[in-house]
Image 1 (cartoon, protein in one colour):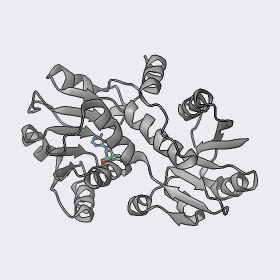
Image 2 (image 1 turned 180 degrees about the horizontal axis):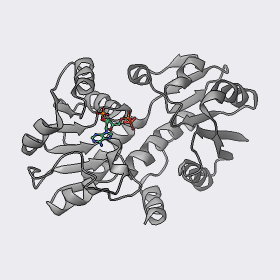
Image 3 (image 1 turned 90 degrees about the horizontal axis):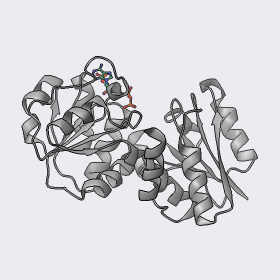
Image 4 (image 1 turned 90 degrees about the vertical axis):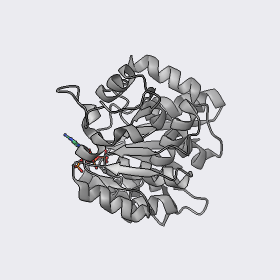
Length: 272
Ligand code: ATR
């Protein structure tokens, strides 16, 4: 029997075990996926244990996505660029390879929800790990005009420099220029809070036909999405990104892409 895991701290709220175990069951795969609570100071020993006990692969979540890299034998180019890994594959010869499926997961989810709009100007709000991953993935998938706004502008600037195109903006500049963007992505950690306005920028200038996406899926409708929906925008919740990052990891482990649409419905029921 194959087995997989997700390691993180905290880990008890993760929906990954439900998602992967459901896929195993529905696809007739004899495997199990378990959550393992691993504190920062125990990461090295946890990786050794996963290897010793024969895990076929695992997901990595907060706070280990960067730290894990030193324990891996090989990195996929996207994970290398990002300096962060969310998926580990134990290869035939026992070596460990790291991938980052978060950014590509976002793009798959966006395109599944609203189709491909590669000609649109994209604004990413947030220049942390999430914003960075999404920026690289969008570029790789052929979105040519990607700008990044951040409270700390220098962080947006350094991503834009690595991307080799686009503009870094302050939040104030992003507000003023918002009407230029066909796709606006909320990638700050602010969506998590339900207090205050919960918005990184005012959406006064948002186009009516715009697509508004958030990386947060709990709550499903963030303050950003609620406001964007009121203004007539098409909404993409963070749930799709979560499901597709898992689906891409699943494909790395088992070679098949699982059903994502049915999984979205099931998880939406749980998050209501
Ligand atoms: P993640 O890896 O999830 O992206 P992170 O690396 O901590 O998390 O990044 C958090 C992002 O949310 C950053 O873009 C951060 O802005 P700064 O780079 O200026 O810190 C943004 N963020 C967090 N709290 C915010 C707030 N109250 N207003 C605006 N942006 C905020």
